[in-house]
Structure formats: C-alpha cells, structure tokens
Length: 192
Ligand SMILES: CC(C)(COP(=O)(O)OP(=O)(O)OC[C@H]1O[C@@H](n2cnc3c(N)ncnc32)[C@H](O)[C@@H]1OP(=O)(O)O)[C@@H](O)C(=O)NCCC(=O)NCCS
Image (cartoon, rainbow, N blue to C red; front, top):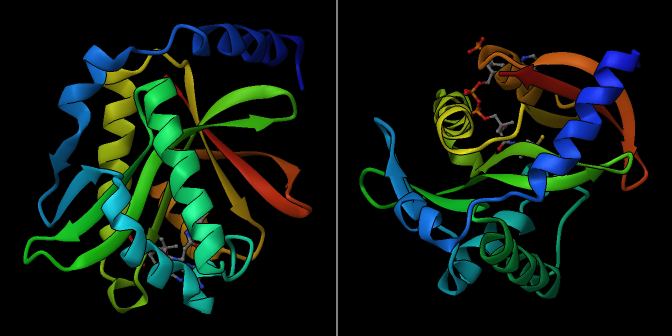
C-alpha cells in the first residue's frame, strides 16, 4: 500500500467517528428503486431472514448456512448498527410485496480500519435479473450523497464472481486481497 493510500485510510478511520446521528437517519428509513422497496431492518424481519440464510446457495459465500439462532444474533447486531451509525441493512421487497432479500451499508473492521462496506443478498428465485445491480446503484448514491466516508468498499469471497461483477458494474475496482473470517476475499473500492 502506498503512503498516500495509508494516509487516506487513516483519515477514513477518523471520519467514521463523525457518523450521522439519529435525526439524519429518519429519512433513510425507506427508499425505492424502480423494482424494489427498501425498509430499514426491523425485528419483524426475522422469519424472512431466517429463510434466506437457511438457503445453502444464498449462504455459500456468506460463511455458510446460519441457524435460526445465528440469524437472530445477526438481526440484533444489525439493529444495533443502525442505532450506532445511522445506516445499516435494509429489507428488500419487490413491488408486489414479495420478500426479496437484504442490502446495506455497514462499517466493518478491515485490517484495523473501519470501512464502509456495501452488501446485498437476494432470494435465489430472483437471481440473474439485475436486482443486485439495481440496489447497489442506489446504495452507491446514498453513500455519495448522505455519508462522509471518502471511499466505499465491497468484500467478496474469491469464487463469488456474480457479486464481483455487480461491484464492478457500479464502479468499484479490485484493490487487494484480505482474509475475513478465515476466508480469502477480494477488496473492491470506489473513491469519491
Ligand atoms: C451475488 C448476487 C447478489 C447477485 O445478484 P443478481 O441480482 O443475480 O445480480 P445481477 O443480476 O444484478 O448481476 C449479476 C452479474 O453477474 C454476472 N454473473 C452471474 N454469474 C456469474 C458467474 N458465475 N461468473 C461471472 N459473472 C457472473 C451476471 O451475468 C451479471 O452481469 P451482467 O449484467 O454483466 O450480465 C446473488 O447471486 C446473491 O444474492 N447471492 C447470494 C448472496 C451473496 O453472495 N451476496 C454477495 C456477498 S459478497
């Protein structure tokens, strides 16, 4: 990593401390794209999330199938993330109200730096129709217009080529490899 990049990473760590407070989050509780409605993750999303995480294909590159208890813990962690950072995971539904999956912007410790990470996971029946690209465009726009972080990252396990492609389509570029939860991941990044 160059000295300039290291300096920018250090600046980022500082900017995270200046997160938006609750007043700024209220109008981010929901948003729409042309085919999706996103609503701030809530306790009553548990059943849909459990079903999503029990699908081995969906969970293949997310650390494997999660038990209902592991998903309950995930939900609690991510409710707390919203409260602490004013941003987090949204629940996604298609225009007819069908549960579609989840997507979000979350802070993640990558090699000691708190990085804002874009993420998305869809029910398998919806794959291959451009939904991930659609929500990723919206999340990039939210990062650009509503957050101060100088860059946005995506972390993708090495074999997850569909997810890599989505990140590239919305402007993130491969930067380096890292190990997360024991798995080799590519770090993709978009600077402001
Ligand atoms: C990864 C995931 C979000 C993609 O969702 P999606 O709605 O199918 O994605 P999109 O249709 O918007 O775009 C997928 C792109 O990847 C491409 N793609 C799909 N499979 C691919 C593969 N095996 N190799 C290379 N490219 C592939 C598609 O052709 C498409 O690119 P294109 O528009 O240039 O043709 C979805 O498969 C998913 O939810 N997976 C499980 C959870 C997950 O892995 N989340 C990401 C964690 S980092």
